[in-house]
Image (cartoon, rainbow, N blue to C red; front, side):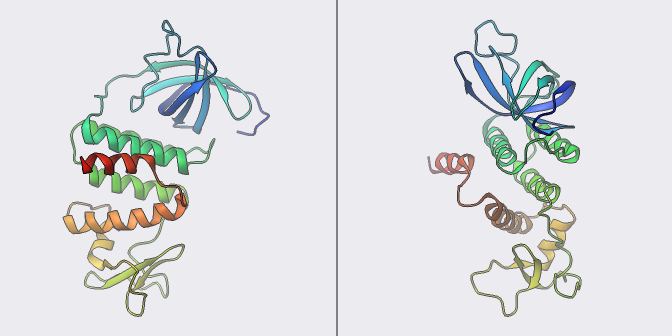
Length: 242
């Protein structure tokens, strides 16, 4: 939304990505809405003990929200819990924070991505149901990069457009795409044609594909995130160390 245009929205499907204190009793809430994208909202009085918003603004729970105002931060008018989703626990909870941090860092404000919203909601639901997080994370990362215009064609080479061969070995060049590994620098990670074809088809079922897709997604995401690392990834490493 353009900065000066006044806006009123009601009944919008959304999730809370992040909150932080604002003034004495309020919160700034980073929301991910289906039809308006990432929208920061001021939740006035939300930190007061009797506030109706206090127990509603939880991460990973489907909400219906409304807001009004103009400028970068609008005012949250209401938020209702839609229910029907178990709470994330353990590893799934850490993975949820990782997804939220990716969205806050990479998704521009007021840029709608209904397909990405649906993929996010589906990923949370499957993790809450106890499915293995790793394949779900790789699939979501791939969808996120595609939605933001950073996606790569993984089943064809960038030079000449020849099809990737299952028995071949390849590298992925940032901002370009897949190339045969022959003649490429030794420090470039190698990917099997079989794994690239599986990733292209959203098949992350084999350990080889999971390992290689983690390497590829980390390489691509780090490029777009820049020098500042992800806090959720650091926390996850520390917990693994314990």
